[in-house]
Image 1 (cartoon, helix red, strand yellow):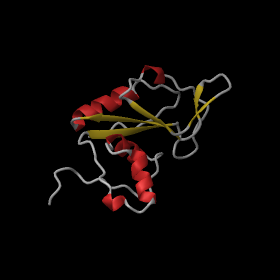
Image 2 (spheres, one colour):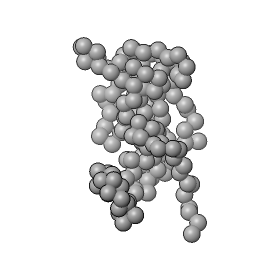
Image 3 (cartoon, helix red, strand yellow):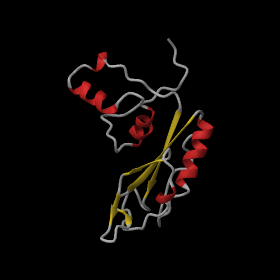
Image 4 (cartoon, helix red, strand yellow):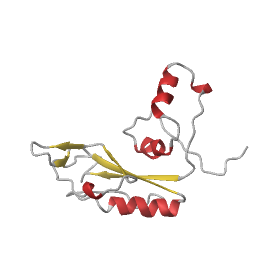
Length: 145
């Protein structure tokens, strides 16, 4: 039966640190831990994975210079204004001795937004991205186009 939605291709063995996974997991309606344990036990073919039909988009925020030589120890601001349904995944952050959040890698954060359609998901994800500030922050502006 033809699929009315575009296919999603996930490379290799994705982890929860991969942007591809960070866009998929929030759409999972089934219990994640049960799915993992069922997979370990070899019974996933009998498990009903249920997915939300909404669209999810993910934008990665990187440090200046990434994927080459990148800068670290830049103060990250703006995360305190996020709402419960706005998802931010930490990839390369660390807190210093004063509990200040700093960049610590090339991939710093990624933001995932979910909505009924791609236009609204794109608007929402970039509104969230605009809240986050750190020196040298870079992100693609074409996600969802």
